[in-house]
Image 1 (cartoon, helix red, strand yellow):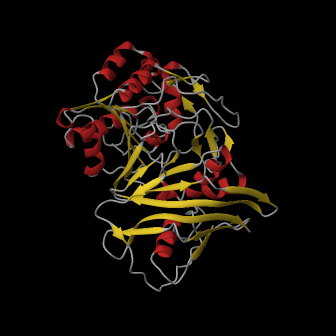
Image 2 (cartoon, helix red, strand yellow; image 1 turned 90 degrees about the vertical axis):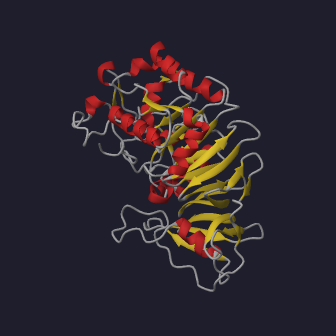
Image 3 (cartoon, helix red, strand yellow; image 1 turned 120 degrees about the horizontal axis):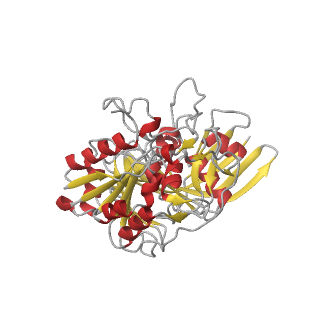
Length: 431
């Protein structure tokens, strides 16, 4: 089978046998809250996409929290196209639909040590199954859940009821299991759907910074859209975005958060998870697991304005956490992994020029640098207190400025390479 898609483009969602067609373009969607209270005992494992089959740290974390050797994982892949829309549905080597992707993930969980893993048969071909008592019984027999990638709006279509945004029976059962101590995990769209209000539905950083965000789901994949009613509301302490390092999405995440009044962003890189203990409580705690990292943007002091040149933002703070680091959401504080120490030995090299800070798809020369690359180079040198990076596009051209201050700190795992960064000031201006 082909690996489930982690970068879906905008498309009409068709509910096969159920005869349902949804095509959101520019129509705002109604605000509504998830139907149950936030969880208090369970945990989340949210991956930024691109979860590799050999990532024992992340798969192991999910299985451990689901009961270890006795773990029973329910796999939900309704974000994938259903079999009726997959021309290769009958070919196990080429299929990429909800059923074969569910079997793929179930097999991986068993390989990593779960006692059992089963596909939960809810998708666009089986929308009615989301309110099936038989499927609810299957949910109640599980000790953990994994939501696969694809298009997060398909989860809205299949597991929530219309503009009222109320839970189906299956989602209500998963929410109850989470509240009583189960683990809920997801990758890419499966992580995005854990969001509360203003869940991102698509868009690129440059177009988002230039044009702003709008409620809805758009055929133009570059347009920054969001769902005001949000996802499932499992994690509400910050806005969630995924594939950050691969697609340079920090810009779109910051613009969406500023437009919609969020003061924090969790921007997850690929093959890396945030493990959230006690989500939705005053003691919510986050641990990073995986090979890359997570950027946490603090927007509590951000100020935005529009000028003839374009949109700008000042007063944001940039933090980047890597494997083993812990973050307390209530106090906004980072505790680096015990294996890391402060980076005291800095070089004299200037920060390299960065003319494609958000990885433009229009850059024919490739993707030579990134916002994270600039931040790490600044943290590693004593030659500069401030570094700038610009967008590839120039009408207008946005400049990102990172500045070290008295609150900035850098930790290293090897004694010389920056790994964890906290407290860099960040601004974005249009020119």
